[in-house]
Image (cartoon, rainbow, N blue to C red):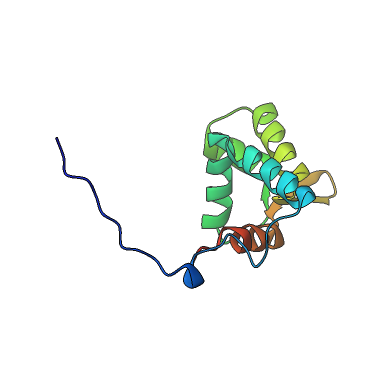
Length: 115
């Protein structure tokens, strides 16, 4: 049997918060949808790759090769991520690029900032 862990008491005036103020119902629903989209491992891998590459625009074909998945599968995940506001779709002629939407992640960081 292990000994119980005793956490130090915190000053309630310095208690952490998830944002400057409580989320509205609409904001909570919007962020929950974004987190749902991010709950898919393939989407996290795609996002991780895009971020590791400096958030430069990337094509479906490039992601297909890197992820080892079919074009329809990658396109499906990119559409979900774009619809959630995580990515922006940039058409150039017959080629479509996808790029990280930094503002969405700035907002996510704001609501998740603790301390």
